Amino acid sequence: MEASVDDETNPVSRRLFLKTSATAAGIALIADPMLEKLLAAPPPWVRPTVKGLTANSQVIKSYIAGIKAMHALPTTDGRNWIYWASIHGNANIPSPPPLAWATCQHGSFFFLSWHRMYLYWFEKIIRKLSKDNNFALPYWDYSDANQRSLPLMFRDPKTAANLLYISQRNNATGHKVNDGDPLPPSAVNSTNAINNYSNFMSPTGSGASFGGQYLPAPQHFDSPFGAIESTPHNTVHGQIGGFGGWMNDPNMAARDPIFWLHHSNIDRLWNEWLIKWGPGDPVTTSAWTSAKFTFFNEDGHPVTMTACQILTAATQLQYTYEGQGGVPPQACPTTIFTTQIPRLIRRDLIKNPRPPVELTKPVSIELPVSSAVDASLRTIAPSKEKLVLNLEGIHVSRRPGMHYEVYLGLKKGQTPDPNGPNFVGNITFFSAFAHGGAEGGTMKQSFKVNAAIARADRSGGKLRVDIIPQGPAEVPVKIDSISISSDE
Image (cartoon, rainbow, N blue to C red):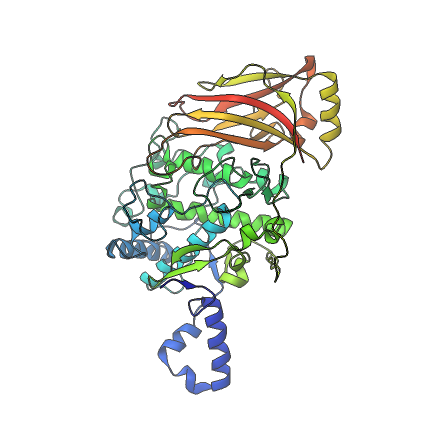
């Protein structure tokens, strides 16, 4: 029977009940060993950085022990390692489909809430199966220039009987992650998403937001992506998995143990955004607040959760992150009064006159800028109205094992810099296409470019878009349309 986290499976409400009961009943209640163990629990748990940890650290030992125990469970147990990974995705779903399989949310504003729930229950499963009540899932902060190589215990095949090491990772020249090759700087840039997007949600068809586009109901895969999903989420998946590796395939990604440290960091970055901007617009949108997702708890029983039950991790889920100051405010109102359905009012200011563009190597596309358009750009750039670069009709036959940096307004001969003002984002592919063997298809991406437009070179009535591959271009990629629009 599927349970809601509002009932006895809710660890927060249960703990509060036990504490209250213990106070009322006095010392006799504490004599019960099971209750004593619960009351001795160490929440809030602090998810540590993996920096400085080794294979001999207790948290890593417990992580390995938990993974080993998950592998040993029956294949029909929701906590089994392959079953649990298949909740994220599986290309070979039997009929009838196992409960909760292939339900991950990508390409919409459900992305962050679904993955927070997925991590939460995974962490509790590891905690119970490893018998370490202090276990908290580490995070990998690859934005730190000293942490851009895969942590050593995940790439040393001699470590921990190979449980953290897998060979199905990027092996391209210069990107051999199991050899310690670092991730490229543009793959790990999170400041763009956190600092430049104060809106969590964007209208359907637009990725110009932190959290992703509005959809009226959950959907397994879609595009365009929100800023944080595009980079660093998709880019790190692509760079770790490479061409054909597990992390670059949504149907296999959660089988790689580094998946969980990667997503722990994405969850931490959402906390950073919440601390900076507050809960944002989805909390007034019933499509987001009322959507229910199914997982399994640490005892193997099905449970459901909604976004309003996980929005403030420190108070609702009892975990925080090492090194993170501040606590996001409690966010969901008691009553959701309306269902917001944002509309996209788009005015194309510039349209690429020469589609399609083929990305086999670095390319520069010059967009014509008339005096009237230039005046509009200068007026809109410093305002709250969004200027958006749209890349539409992006065709791939198979998911590439890399990403493409996108720059706007570079001068001829200027060196591209992913930390500079002309960098607007990445074309990424990880979560664009549905499960079931569909390797490729057509997608779109969009980027807010107000800051880049304000600094862009428009000499000669031209505005350049530069697209630069970050890895071997093993798969043909074509773009049908490039435009700059004013989105309201």
